[in-house]
Image: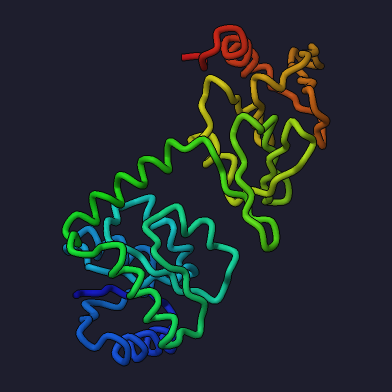
Length: 254
């Protein structure tokens, strides 16, 4: 089995290799990479490894950017000193999420999980992962991490999404708030355009939440929703035609 390590801390990379050698000496480490850019270049130029160990915080950004640029079909074990990225890791090819410093027991557990998942059909694992990713992309439920709980949030529960101080929160029709680990830009790609509209830089609103539209200063529009909002939702004059077309036709304007 061939493994690729993506880790920008030398000590952590050496520890990972030592633990791996202790637990599974037959695994060959084909390369150790330190950055997002270097990892993308390597994955484009080489066959996919059988297993990928990946830190989350790299020298030039977080490693989730790798998945946005190249197709990763290999199973991934994330290794990190932070536990708040577990939900994001579940959305890619992650089979385990190990906290530093790594130890032999954690490594055995991860490799045993890989063995159970692949079984005798290791060659088909990449295609199965791609199928799983496609299903996740089409899912209508978000996983919300609230302290020590994971709460499923269905998109029909969302009245609007709001960003402030680099934090994104979904507001439900039930009056509850749900912290999300995505930007509004990412949510735009996941929420269906016929049901959700990007009102401005801070808001995405659900069609079913729009209660009233008020003509505002400068030919802008102000939206009133069926639930309270942290601030007024204003649509610029330039986007008024697009919003009206979306609201009346059920489809985004061309």
